[in-house]
Length: 338
Image (cartoon, rainbow, N blue to C red; front, side, top):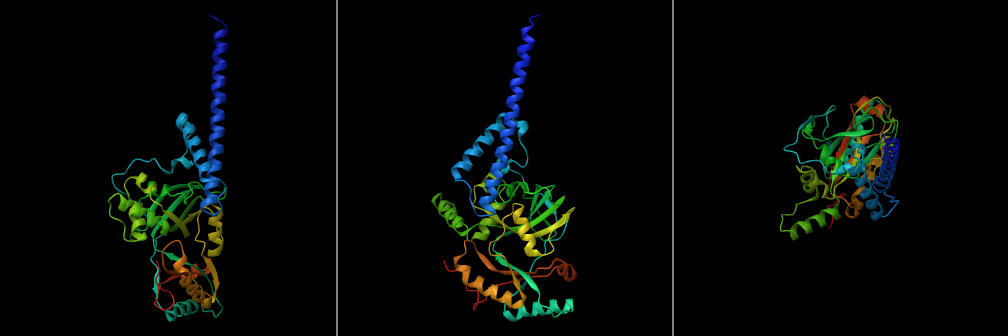
């Protein structure tokens, strides 16, 4: 037996091993870079690199994963698109119901809302509220286990929604892996998928050019896009996502105030509505409502009111979690001007 053959085989095996380790290290580096760039772009609205550089790195990562399938991970940025079409959406039972919001349409109804909260708390102290626009989109939930996205669902009837995991995965504003080692073991976040106005107008122009029927409004466009049976169709639509709260949580601690919770979620990689505010007392709520009414015509997305939530989590529990949606009125929340 030629004594050089085993040595040559060992050298070849060593070279392959070194190449595999180099590929694994580069893939991990690329995933970290792409996750960071995606976070800066979507959650912080502060792009770190040009789109062309992001695309170049994504192509490189996909090339490595194609050559080394064993390196592919579920949370890889390359896995937002690629799932096979589904025959039908399955059902998802919400661990905690996704409740609808109570409505108010006048200043007096908002004051009555605040008065009833004070009565139930048996307190005259001013209450701090978390206020945010009510986006005209589709409510969703996204479940994370040990920091990894595992399931997405529509609100449905509040108790049971449709499984849209693969379609939700295509929306770049949703992190596939949380930017923390201290996430709860189970974390369900809730938010609104919407189509920004600029994307809606561009999509309808392109649809008309193809001879297709355009969508009536951004809400219908978002809902229709998210319910495509082929995730690649969803990925081609200009969808965005704001997270506005949490549902089921297990195995972790979260901030005791809603405003602070939103900032925590933002640090973990979620996109939060930049118009969200914490306001003092009912007067702060009404001032916020007037401010959003004035700003409505210039916002890059469609809204149909504002939402108030008691900011203190302990008070929420005592009240049974009270929130109020305040809808448009002719006097202080004029229709959007186009």
